[in-house]
Image: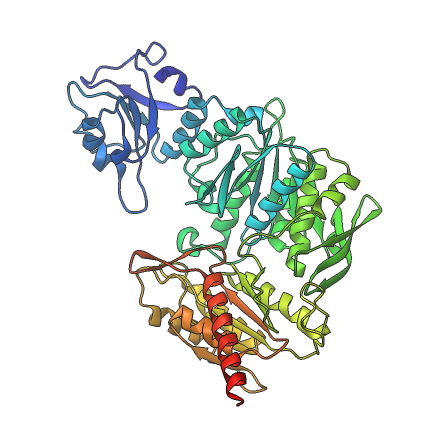
Length: 543
């Protein structure tokens, strides 16, 4: 593709060839065969983006990119350009700090601006993004729409599914997937949009037909520094990227959790600027979509969605009140896209759960084991709360029928840790919550990355020190995650609930920069089988 075509809509500060002569951008003869932000992956004819990252400055790799055949280089800050000498390719300079914005625009141009011919639905928030995105994608498929998915667990492009290395990939890969989805005949795309992606402008070349805001609680403050910065990053999806009509205000709907204080703030700031569909449980927050008569049990949810004065009964296999919010957000996205309320309500009842999100591990044991991705204070509190709702009511488990007498007062056992090289401030908060809400809190390792696992556990323990361990509550500190899971399973009595939190769908544990194979699901299954074998051996010995 001609370089001049790629630069459409990009504010170019200067453009020179290798001899230092100004080039005619409109008449540039340069053909670009690909885009790269990694000099090691540059191929002959590529446009290389020399951008500053968290650990390195791309300008340091210009010479390497040129040696591999880069046809042009784009940078967003002056200086360090000695590598661009006579005979070198074209050099394009954009305003300082605008390189990633240029990358997104150029990537969209390179792949033919596919979002203009797709209905792209973006989902953002701290917790619930993955489940909500999966639910919307499933619901659209139920309604006959071929729908792609870009998210934390996997990407679905046409008939191909692959594991996702990033929640929201860099602009070239993101636009490439949108193009592939379009060519595969998919008409809709649901994508998680992380705060990192919004702050780094990865999806700025995309036009969104609808956007969902799930909630905003503490996370990623190692990157955003303050909750205000975190909120402003999320807000960009709604104020900048929603589809606009004739260059005016966004005409696409924003589906917002009105029970979340940041959600209410977002709705206020969008008032008169974009259509807002609010959802929630609390009537005083005046949601457009409200859930009522909620029954939360070990086998699922039953509630009523009230929309435009009419109620629609929903029976779902998902567990926990947090999933009421996820189902409402999916319902909101569907009606926001123009589907009828009755067909939207029917569709969300058919939806299945997501791997690693309150995922039941059932090996015939007489207690409940669930694996969940909860890795923030808010998510951990919601997870334990969902389990407590099941436990306190002594609800019969209609799924297994093995727990015939689920009495009140069942214990909640939670296994959790915190990731290394991430926001340290949330560690004590999570420790405090676990010690307060669970009957037994077992603190272990998550992904310690480059940090000392014991130091991370000490940070978590600091939040537990002010909690009285009396009243039947207890805590243990077991750094080895597999051993911690074995302890939790071995401690569980009939009817108890074991929650294994933090890693969810992940199949690895990162220690000292190395990813080791590890699955909470597999560790739980092994622990349950070992427990069963031990009990059988005792029975056979007549002990």
